[in-house]
Length: 312
Image 1 (spheres, rainbow, N blue to C red):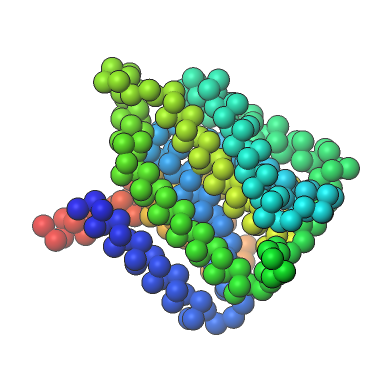
Image 2 (image 1 turned 30 degrees about the vertical axis):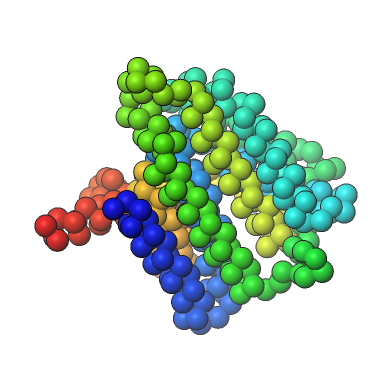
């Protein structure tokens, strides 16, 4: 049953992604869809850590920024091929995440939140201050993404790349969740002591999911650097981390498609609310507060539960 539901969800997502660019009126809306795709990829990985394993991270934008700046620096300063720079950035972030995971994941609650926040702040400070390498507050040029003589240019070309990467990320996440690893993650989320009693190596699984979510963020960051061509430190700061966590919570924790919907919704909603000018932040905040009050489990789980009750 879970397998059937998973494939049905992936099929529906594939159809939606294939149809979407055909109905978007111009490249501005395609650009917004691409940005939503980047956020969705990071949030699907972050949801594995927060939603399924129950480990908060307030510094995830740091891993996104490290991947982005690794690609930009290696391509701009050292002439690396973009794909090699992307893989090097993912390896760097994976090793960093592995090195810091064991000590910080021993913490719980707000102590863990403060530790991950500190990591994100340190990365942001380094990016801002090492101007000779990163360009400092002015940012750095990343250039276009090239592979085998083919240059990836234009919003619609990037849309298809991000759509495929999003599908692959969702497929990997849903398979992980339905595997023994996913069951171990849900067990330690429910009760870490109880999970250890029944033989789950909680430290191993917490480190694994932390590294996986960080590497996903790094890959998305590397591609984002080439998409925007000009990278600035704001994509690795504290506010970006809070934005990513908000997207996961808004869409529904412990729901892969919830993280995806939350990222897409909160990326596109500010664009829709621009017509209200100065009242945009108030309306956006009101919508988010109302959703959390009346849908405390998040958007997708609440709607899914409602539809299930209606069918019953």
